[in-house]
Image (cartoon, rainbow, N blue to C red):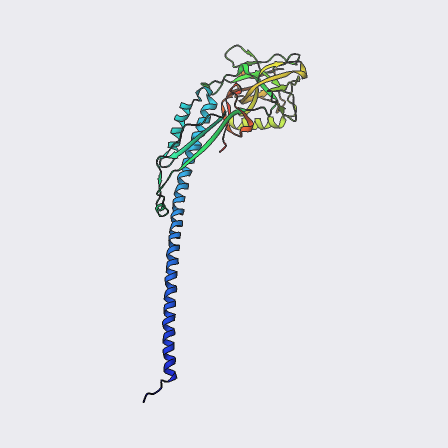
Length: 356
């Protein structure tokens, strides 16, 4: 006699089948997750490799940028100081030196010739000597990278601007390509035709005085004179320095501390006209290292200041009006809009800067 199977036994068989189905589903899910994780690991490794190599490329590029900046500035200095030496051969030679010397691993080098095609501009391209080997780039199919950069420096000479209202004669200008510091000179007041005062002279204490001296410019504000775009300035027929006491006090304080003060002043090539209608033709701007002055009578502080350090032969006396100092070369940082690249205005005060 066949006995019927109990319902409880049948339930157990069904439960077993469900357990086998569940185990198979879990196994499939684990396999799918493993595939996703594997794919994500490849991506993560790729990003990690990319981050490491990008960091190395950025570090190398920063070093090359130092070399490019230094090279461009060196070429700008060469071209501004001695325009006749501003040749492609000399520019390339300088760029080679500075590109190499300004990278930590001395791997920098010039990449092509220096670009001097734009007046007052020097563009230097640099690159690493050989491609940079990538540590993990092979994961993404790149094993090396070419690293390059560039820099552009500009140079020029001060363009017409607002200045202290005093101009010096270029007949006494004594700087040159080979002379960085001029002689200590006394500049006396220079009249324009019909102006007040004796004709100006400059004197260094060793040779006969030269015709020249200094002249007052008509003011456009308190102790300010404007040089026009045509390189001219009106003359002040008076023999005074009204409105300049604050600046003269600052000069005096600097001289008391350092022995001199450097000021950029206009230098005139010609003076013409009568009185207030007179005109100074400005050649350019030069840096004048001032030691003292006498713009008023003795004891009129600060319009007269002549420290004992000034040689007696160069000091002013009586009704004489003068300024004592020497021309010096000077280089400063600035913007191209403030300069001119016309070499006829080069009086060895130079503005140099990086533009990119």
